[in-house]
Image (tube, rainbow, N blue to C red; front, side, top):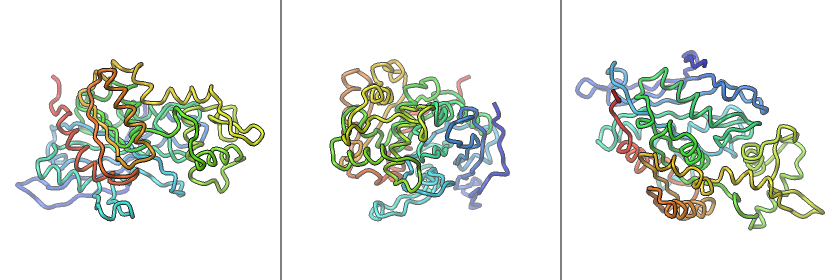
Length: 368
């Protein structure tokens, strides 16, 4: 596997020189590029050369023999961004500034981690933030005949690259996976499918609409009808490209041009009709339905936590269904609801809940 660091692609490295008892108080963020075999030959033409942000804790540059647990953070879908080179992982890196967060200032990952470490609320960890955006603006972190093997990209190629090039403690007990929205669902799916890779998972506002029910609102029906009438991606709106992206991930069809995807619905005499075979394919990626087949993997986890805003109309129902399913299956987990809609308090939750929890659940000693 070609996992050579292309240090010429490092875009920035944030280092502060203030000293606290001989050790820098602040960590360091680098952006590097690596080649992923899992994404070779994807039909969307997305490059296998992928950027990734890596946060290195304060002692990293000084402690030559010290090794650290690694937390992998998966970002959400990025339908509203039009720039082809936009990297949604910057949402973890940068301070959050938008209407939803104006009453809840949210810091970027370096400020968050440096503060948690300095105040004794988290141990030093490496934080890995990959770019999961593709031509359809969201890979959904699953293996697909069309979009590429994104699950293998995250759980195999990326993990190997990080372990080969950074001072990580190798092994599932010192490796965690977390994510928001699309990344939250990806966390649940990858946590079940790769139990030997991740020992702890934390899913934030994970889930997806219409895994197991027909469109229930006029707006949703209109969205599907619009997609089914599309001939190409010219001037496509963000809701339509989100639906196309979900379909290319969950029901890919390399022979079905121009989008290389089968859709859950079809138009018959101007009316929306379900396609049960395609809906069944989507359901294979529904974390609630996956629990029965992956019970042993979930029982193997050292820590399993997820949360959702109680005003999140997008995925709240799905998260509550997952709680019910896990309880009935006897799988240990922790679940919390908080006051927020979808897209609110993402980095704030990362600071207040996610990273402190992962710090307590991960192993910080190497197994001899």
